[in-house]
Length: 192
Image (cartoon, rainbow, N blue to C red; front, side, top):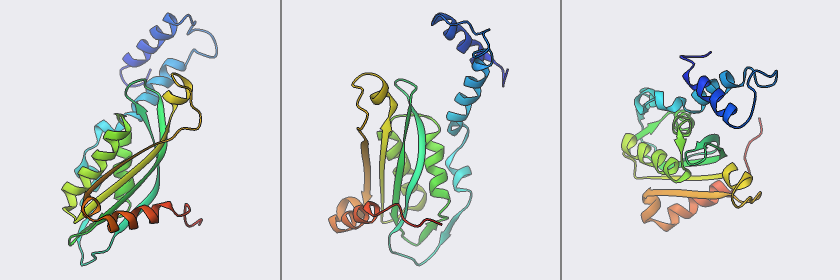
């Protein structure tokens, strides 16, 4: 069993309660696999912002919008422990401080690797960048499909949730917000 094996033992007990035999061939390793998967899906709890941003903030005179869009992510809904999967678009307006571009997807990854709701994920990303960079503005848009809506409850296969967090100039200046929204609407971009 992985780590201390306690999660695997609980999964085996859960499977037994559901009427399964965890000794049968298809399930004999499932409790350990589920424990390993859950530890990976929640690995964001073991990270912190300083570790993720890793001193990748620099003083620079650039003052136009910086966007990293189409950041794929997956997370677990804290209400049903089912996945939600989507894309995140992040922008900020620097105020003499920029961050290495790869750090933005790493920040999305850190927060998505926790039990989440989409609304919190969106604001955590925006607030963290706002605090770390103190920019003139931050914008985050998250679009995702939720398996809890597709597989149970309302069972709507084609619904997508979209959340946004707009801070600073993205909230105060409609033209800045409109520019960001127009830029993230365009096609997925370069195929290399």
